[in-house]
Image (tube, rainbow, N blue to C red; front, side):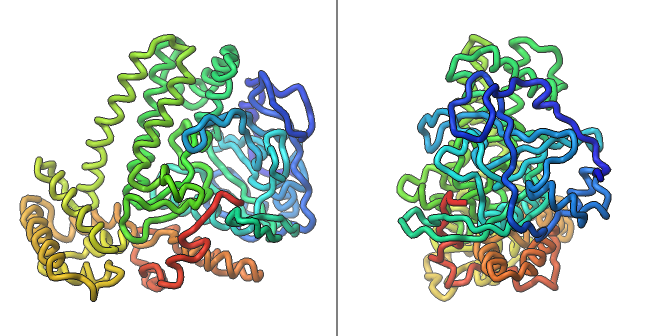
Length: 519
């Protein structure tokens, strides 16, 4: 039996393979990947599937509940005429060079050609690879639920992202120390099937550059350009520069989307940065509850807060600098890279203001808008104010109702001081005056605002509730959240209970406000 999909293997057909075989940990030289075989799970069970994505990939609906689907996407069986592999890459982690990293917990099955696009299919948690280091290559249900739900939630928010096709439990127990504090315990194992045009990262280029393997650096650059940036034309030094420019632009667009919806990645290492500007590797991510530039969900980063919400644009730039350093041997000139990186700073300021204008319903560009936006952000910081609810409530604002907005969005509206109330009153008065300069009718403005200010996001406590139920064998909440997050901008009154501020019990709960890289 086979699927009604068209299999491709462009990555492995063009790029060099590791000559050594087997999953034993090792330094892999002069190769872009290693052949591996997924670990066969004890008792796999399909928990959920993204049917819309399955259709995009070309699956027949009947195939989704087949024995073959469960076998292939749990790693139990290698699909006909395919050969799984793990990618080799390096990276900077928390600002420090980490050397070879690679797919330590991910195994690529094959590629699918559908709708004139190539889609790489990857299992997370399917067993050890040469890049697993001290790890076992497995994943737990806790982290797998978070990745599965968030990948699809981000897609429907309009944020560039990898996707998730399926969530499968393995029937095996996996030992994990959630908070890295010596309290390891067994958890349910699970596998997520990730989908993206490619999983190539900045680190794929860094690996070859660091080893001065220029021949293979050129091979992976040429493959990436031909496959995913064909509009850049014939390969040359100027093509590599334009490739870098495209990656910078895509990365910037992704960051602007993150800031728009209040998403904090949590671990923006260079090995977690996609060359296609996709959100990749959903680990200790989180969503802003109260608006806070300094917030990070990652306990590993709690001291330095390198990957905090307000620093994500700067970290993206730093990571792009590392990519520029890796590509330098193909160009042998620094000025073009410097010019592009400097332009990133300029473009970010412009695009950020444009994005914030859209959140405020301002279609016309006026010089004073930047000050209005800056004042708003400072006010949001003065008292804990829910970012998602504030901007969504603003879509219904019609003047003289600012107290309603604050009451719904503030975590402690009763503590609003007279001094702060006066500041808010003045800001809303200035906002009213600014809206009068717009030509759009109120109803049209509000409709536009509702397309950029989501009503529903995957709040950390929501994911944790689904995990808690899943641990008991009840997967209904996973499906409820999955359906909810397919239409994050719609009112969906049947799901109104999820349009709420973080409950107080979740403020300091592990999994809700504190997360680790343990998966």
